[in-house]
Image 1 (cartoon, rainbow, N blue to C red):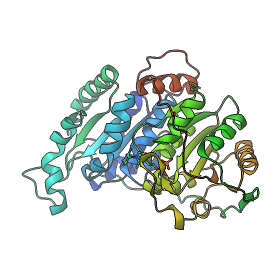
Image 2: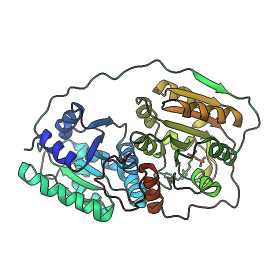
Image 3: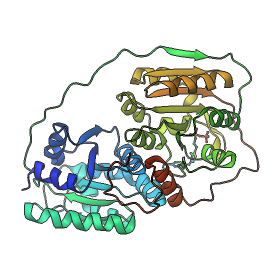
Image 4: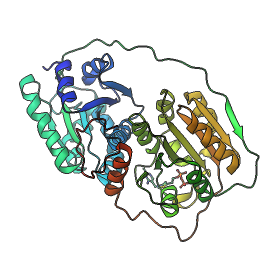
Length: 392
Ligand SMILES: Cc1ncc(C[n+]2csc(CCOP(=O)(O)OP(=O)(O)O)c2C)c(N)n1
């Protein structure tokens, strides 16, 4: 068996500054070790795909975050791996357990995923290796994984078998609990404006230093059509992950980070609001443009009509919440959100529809990711390795 402390040291010498994910009992020793460690931060995710999206955001800010997950959670990461990490070529180290390993006794719910874990990883293009249970062999296996990430710019999975890591006790501090903020209502009800109007207003209001992450579908297409800038990260796939990517970026930069979300996407990963709300002193502004439909795929209703998003954001712990009713109110909400540490939530109800001649981002997502990373980290280099630590 290997020692959690030694494993953590091996990860930190390779640049891992943070660990996120959802626990598995096989990983209890490693997570308990990280939670008790002041040098490496642990961020609890509500969903493995959210953890991977946050780790991808960290990479976009020049920091390496390792994702830990049960192999059941590999299922939750498939969309993020295929539509974000592969599409944008974002390398992230993964530590995935092997519940249900063939030939070993385990619970019935792990049987199928246990049987297919290595082949599922291969099928979706994630190179992987078993994490050895002998301390002396760890370094070489981690080197192989890090070399593969540098060569391919893709995630690499270290697969952990039962009993690989020695037990560790948990010493987790209580989180600070603040009062829910007052929801600030801004502006007067008027004829609802389009997403394009809202995006134009947002572009006029944001400072040039702000980094912007836009959600999947027409939001990204409209933003690209209005202005294509290095500080834009168009999330072309991985619907629902924009806020988690933004959180990952905001944790590692002093720049303001603005996420532009849709109602359907936000509902797909509502847990992310709880993860964001638990943060403080973050220059993260989560904008939600709510047209109550999946506009990008033909206008079918989402479940947004009966959902009070500002109330959810306030209850989740966002430090400022602005419920905006017109564009002047929206601009005011954005300015206030940008003026002090958040996270902040800025909500605007919009009408459906877009323009017929809408473009699509024609810069490859891989290039979008690299120029965004260079903007956030202030570096001019486009080829940047996984192990680069905080650049600002
Ligand atoms: C996991 C996944 N499911 C479905 C889709 C297809 N899809 C792309 S955009 C979109 C609608 C998003 O709705 P919303 O966030 O409300 O934004 P809107 O289109 O209204 O601007 C859907 C369903 C996808 N890209 N990924």
